[in-house]
Amino acid sequence: MIVTLAGDFRPEGELDAQSRQVQRQAIRTAQDAVLRELAGSGVQVLRRYDALPQLALSVDATALDRLRHSIRVAAVRDDTAQSHSS
Image (cartoon, one colour):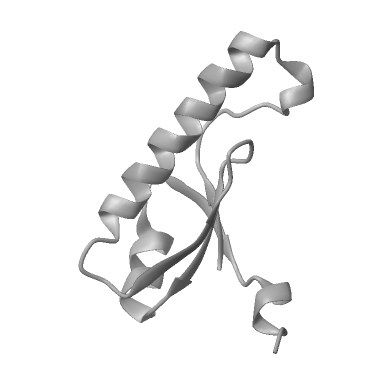
């Protein structure tokens, strides 16, 4: 699954170097908060993105339900590239 985090994030090309670093830290903090919400469920982190407010996760039904109800999550979608790979 690709999980898009809620929040006001801007493309890095629109930011100066200091703002990019601040935003990357905000993304990391938001990722950590979502992963804490998933504690005790079946979740595997496939990828943390540095510059994008997203996570690539493998989740069970419990984790998926938590993601869909989290105020920290803007969207959850299937990772079609991952699901079709052998």
